Length: 449
Figure 1 (cartoon, rainbow, N blue to C red):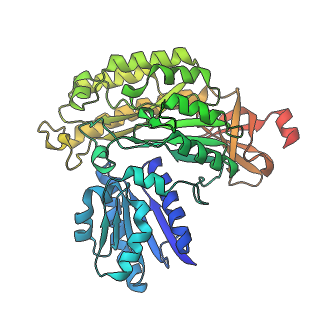
Figure 2 (figure 1 turned 45 degrees about the vertical axis):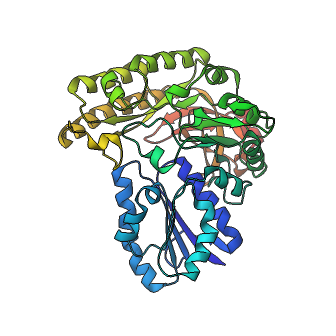
């Protein structure tokens, strides 16, 4: 048996792709291992959204030189968005690399391995055959359920047509493409049969999903969610990442009508300034985002939100930044991701002239993160004293401990039987620590544990 080591950077889409690459390579005799040393094949599945993620990959490739010297027949592969964007540069900067494969071409890995065995030099594949890829990877292999086996990623849509001026995704993942409903539902059923109780639907713009069924009819995301909710053993459904422009009436209504659709939505806004939003080509205003949040809260009163923010976008003034802080105060978020702007080569914003000084970006990010962290703490504290439904995913670090998640993705630690894993049970929340909630099973669930 050959050893396969995969290191994944970036988003859940990459985590899904890594699992599918392992599936594709399993028939060739590859089994996954936890370390690169001694592996027959090493794959770095990369992210190109931020500069730091890209440079981490080059650092990893530098460390691979010694491992390759010790095992010359090791295949070193760079996959994902950095591979798509910088294939030629990767080969130039890191001769240790054997294969370079983009996110829409990894279904060709078996063929690439064969080509590498026949020829000297590097093998590159960076086309955009998304439809072909989904046809090849149809069906679920043993690696495709998440590490816990309880929550599973399922890609339904790839690519982006929005062309935000700061983002490389349209150039690395290609145009928007949706899988057929039949493919997705079949995969969801297979994941459920393997023990997944939560399905997380993935896409670069997942709510742009428009799949064509065998009868020629188009499905949107709301209809797809309902079909997956009809699978008996699927208990929870989530989706990410969404775009405000694609949040239509049927999807808003689904949040109120489909009980299995969890009441936490990741809805990136990036900025609270209309000037900056226009420069980013987001094609919505701050007030339109506020209105959308209001409609979602009207559809489901207990829904909470997470978001993405970029500070220090070229031209962002003090007034623009304060508009972002005002939006955060107006909406209130349960969780957020925030970053300093970093230019990505090939994007329109990379050519901007009105750059924000690094010190100012750092100061603004610190202020924003302090506010967001306070809101997150406030949201978590409201759980204390409540009884919440928790899906248990895995054993905890302590003896007899279980770890699960609330509908709001908060990790929860309790004492309980291993038999509770994969079940949803009521937990009385008693305490909050830095990274998780702590509580106890209610009497009825404790008796059945």
